[in-house]
Length: 217
Image (cartoon, rainbow, N blue to C red; front, side, top):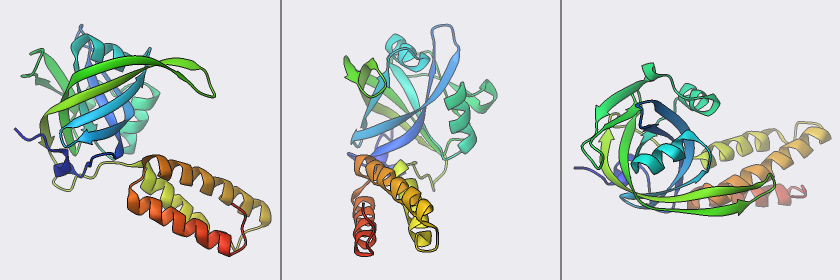
């Protein structure tokens, strides 16, 4: 049974934007977007704040499905509420609990995960202190539905935005230039956090060029 995530372009130490689908003890489905980091070819890491249905279902059942998609509607629906049942396909689960699981019907790929460890800690940020769950899971089954599957990473989108603003920065007014530079710093932050080596090199090239032009960053 295939479990190697490199088969769908997901690599060690990289973070990807995915949609997690779970089913609760009463058979209700839930879907929500998360950033997922690859630890090994068949091991992933999630950080999920306490209080939502996803973490409750994962704690109850010890398993979940990771959906790989670039569909904006699916990300919007799963962020604002959850994805309606009509967009999901239910399958009999042959792993730990022998119950049902659900995946996005039009996902380019999906994989079933079993939780190997779950630790809870306290995170303090600019908003509030929150309980957060650190979850390591093993990929036990990988299903590729689209051979051209490409997992989503925030860094490439941040880089493209920075490049578009860069191409316009010398033809806009001073206030817009200031806005572009503020956006550049946000793009740089995202890329340094979740980007690969080429994306990090690219944003550094862009930064050095802007500094050479006399912009203060």
